Image (tube, rainbow, N blue to C red; front, side, top):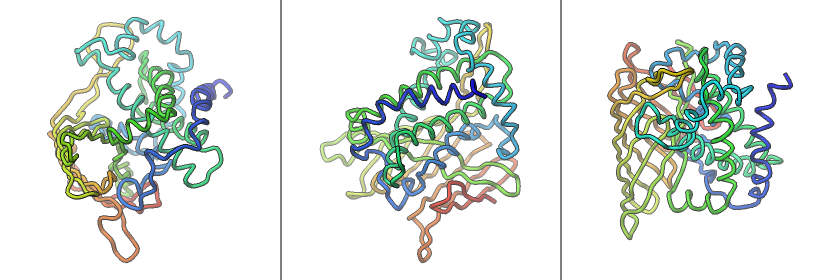
Amino acid sequence: MIRKNIILVFLALSGLNSAGRAQDSADYFYRALPYGSQANYDPLNVIINGGYGVLQIPNYTDRRALEYPYRSWWNNLWGYIGNPVNTIDQFGWKRFLSTEIFPTSLNIEKQQFFPNYFLHALGAGMHYRATMEWYRHHRFPHPAIGSVLTMTAYHLLSEVVENRNNKEISVDAIADLYVFDPLGIALFSNESICRFFSQKLELAEWSNQPAYNFHSRNMENMGQFYVMKYPLTCDKRWKAFSHFGLNAVAGLSRKIDRERSLSLGLGFTVKELTPAQEEQVGRALTARLALRAGAFYDLNNSLMCSVIFTGIPESRFRLNLYPGLLKYKKITPGLFLSQESGRGWVTGIKLQYLPLGAAF
């Protein structure tokens, strides 16, 4: 039990000193807006969307998260991350550094570093800062420590679910937990970094609205996503636009007025994670891609509505309506609707103050 706490202690200590210096500074990523994706943001929502985000990939067919053998999966993961040096020795240091750490190849089979930079260093770093700001706004003691512990829970859950029954040597979780997650915390403990991404690139969280399906016992509509915009015109009406997570689109965003924007993008969706074609010891995963298109409407950079179309039958269409768009008296729920092959239409509702909604 003691050794199993090593990861928690390591990740916590990696960010506490620099995090503590940021506690009394500005809010960059959590603005406590009562509408849109900002209204859904809280630590439990981060853990659920991030921890189970990999389940949006079609080849993760079992989404009955309440029935997972977590203890067994954790023991399996600990076999790789408990002694990282020994694991990398078996996998190969040169291979580890060239595929997981440094961008050395244009071959997709050797680009395991790509999500490490964007989802862990950048995305998880922003989440650390936003969650710290959430704890501070709600007057929790020691918000930086609370955020580090939240990030630790989220990332460990994510690695457990992603790696599940893998019995081969794997270094992906080592790169994530020991290198890029602490790097993200360190980067977004810096005021200049936060100011640049928040104000210059308008980085924000535009994640899905997760729900539990009481009929199928599946997790639905989970997924962690981010947005960045960069002005293309002097009046900042037109901007380059990117919406990314496990899936990504890029395109243009246009301001409708001072507060509202409409964005359109085209890109890719991950239809499958498969072992990379390498005849070496251990396992590395690579993504098989399909087309993805999306339209997004936001209010003050808080997502109000998104429509996604993909080229894979498991998730052809997905509509998310966020709190504040539809109102009945004082109730303003989030809603979603998706179409999946073999299951037809799935719909769900999520109330603003609950981290998990209900799907049908």
